[in-house]
Length: 383
Image 1 (cartoon, rainbow, N blue to C red):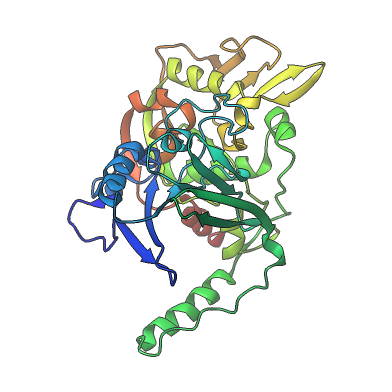
Image 2: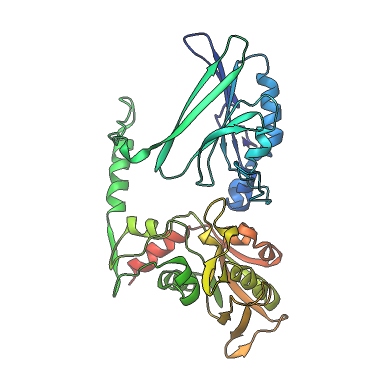
């Protein structure tokens, strides 16, 4: 990722020389799919290369200058590392493709929240240590006299690591920085509102079948902010419910992304298409409702399921995909393909995130730059 204005002080690569003289060339890559969920005003300032093209260029520059190459990649595996089964053909993850690239020795991956202890992969060695410091990867490498490279790795319990004290501010840091940290801590702990009762979050299958009080509340906020006729939201993989006494920090635990809101002009045909894609989240297997494996591997994508407000709809997960929307009404009448509505969705969905490409064709009426979490804070503060 490069700044078009040349103001990002990020080195493309760096060579570290160990005490024994071994030279380690390190560089970083990021999935270019971030253009689908990052804010448009941010993307305009960046040049985002495709990971494989960037890797080839950087590895070419390191060739002959180092003994071991290490890539830190914010991206995951498009294939099952153990079997080669294709898990993701969206282009968002390209670890296996990178491992096939000559000259790359060690690939440290992330993004998918997958736990891969480490294995040789297409001539390289790849690791992924899960997420949220549940574990970390300990990797050991040896280089033989003839230049042969071997790696061994294991995942270790991240919770067993003693928590480090807060990093002290540099001695020459301005006094304002210290006061800013304290102000942030005070802001996060501030009570902002009282709800009639806690808003819980339930099992994902249960919520897909019966709805979610938390999603209903978020949609209520979104409609109040935008005035849209219809609103759609989803819950992140790690979303928590809201307690009755809500602090600022609680909002960021319930709404964990930095999404903003987009109001679009949406046809009845696009709305039905989006609902059909949502409805593929569940299947009926042996008489039970189960999440489709596409949304569990290579990582859970609970955020695929959209919850709507402003329409009367019903999904029948026992029917074939593409015919699961069995009721779709607005204002007491059936929605026709040519009908038109104002719809409030996140910027991630507007960009087609998680396969919702049908929303890209919708006319953008308004792009709100304020993060949804801040709107929730404002809404609760006004109660």
